Image (spheres, rainbow, N blue to C red):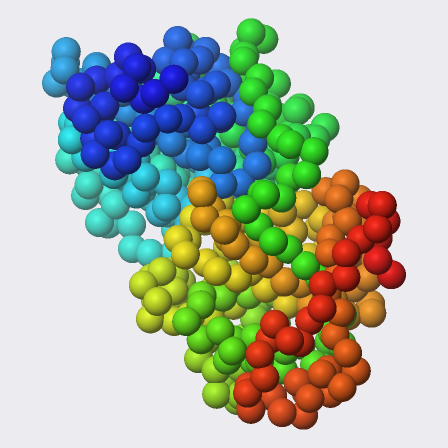
Length: 408
């Protein structure tokens, strides 16, 4: 099926074709008709599958059809997400998809002055994309009216629950009209997610699950190399120096760690920026923009950037620290190999982190390829960290796994 075959408004269909949308992804193919029929949807799909467009396209179309018949103002759909960066990204998708329609989308989030957001809200918008905190601020102040909400969308719902937003979600649902459509999108499904989802969607909700046995995208070549904790900075420097035209997204475990790794890179004459929860929103946006536009080739991040953020052209994801939560590995490496692009992910594993790798392999059900570094090459990397004359490809020798067994 092609997008041209869907029953969509002429404006939206024309825009999709101009943007290069020809055929829907699996999640889009299964979600769009159900959402158009007004069904509640519980959708589970791995990162990079096109989830945002799966709900944005039918919601925009529905509101466009309404606006052709009435001029009455009011927010008709609300998208709730866990992080500011994801709110900004999703609102851009809505505005891009709906640019030839009459549908207006506003992004609201905390950490910035609320007055510009209120000003736009008062003028009239159709869709709100928001983080929970700022959304409730605007509701309590009387600027956000939920009486006309017809569609509630929860995106990255599993991460919202992990961040402790379960009560906020329950409070929001109590304020919404009972007759509404609820779309619940999550990357993973577990007992906690099921309980929350089934409290919100109707008993006849459509459940859609796009989750292959190996949740890591086939477009990502991911490997692990054994590196002691204190030596990781030297390996990162060498990798960046020998691939200076590529873009690297580096994940660390904590905010403090992000700044320390950034400082270590600066001491080694490698330009880097950081993004994490302790930075002001304007600084976070500036860092992301610099990374997106290639003004900076190395961005060091905590897991706040692993969930749902779509940054085009990430060549390498580096797990400088192995994630403590196994499923976060999938979200991290999913920042590369987006769409039809290929990507690489390399994890630096110290001796103390080996149990974390075992947990990841148990979660993904697939052993991760080990890369072997000879003792002499290891020592050269540490001792000549600022040299970078050797080719990284010569540094590692891929050791294939035999009969699916983990390489020790």
